[in-house]
Image (cartoon, rainbow, N blue to C red; front, side, top):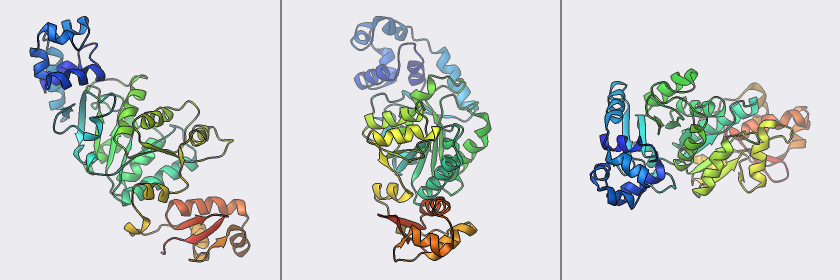
Length: 355
């Protein structure tokens, strides 16, 4: 482990050169034992010179720090390293881990990302999607930032799901500090909090776009819930597209700043998610695979009780319930997210399950 950490900390050895060096020399130790001439066949002269110095002091300090704080370490090519990361363009050289990262290769996973300043609509969507996916044993991967990331990870943890938080800084002082309790719960519930940055690394603006490639690579699908036009979530979606991972987006009002990014993704070819079932079907799951107890508000229950296996038009529901259509729409959407009803073409609705 010493050689891997030392190599990753050498200036000029980023993810690309680390991968090339290990693909050629097979182990980090072999890299440090290689001749200057052999190193020059892979890296520039300046980098080869730094490797040849064999200075392990910084790596030794990092290893002691990781051990003291009970942080695990794995590196590209090692047995514990996630298989999902092996073949991406820029695999992280070293991963610092708290918790169980092994299950990320065994579980189907959805990366849920979005704005740090979500609307109530975005919060509800992220929470409900995460909850239902967790009930189907689908892993939730996110960045651990304020907003959508937090509600997505929380939805998984609170419903017994496997969650992975990918941070843009070191694990000793995770960012944001207000989510320390959430990161602790993720680990306690069998999930993982990971970072490619050393334990004491501070959060830096350039770290977050870089960590987004890990979120997408660990996922089978990336779902963008709410995002502005210049949101970092769109970077995650771009990484997913490069990695041949399907991108889904939640549509929103065209007047909403936090829906401009998601609506743009849909316009440019991302798949539209109108309910959790869209994601479940894409992953080969069906709502019948799991039985859940529905928790409905009083207004939702009134709407739910009006439905059956026979399609009912929204106008008929409006007349029967004596509720305006514009009041019905958010209730029906919430019921769709909870897997209670399904919308058919032409604004017809049917009951999906029973209380």
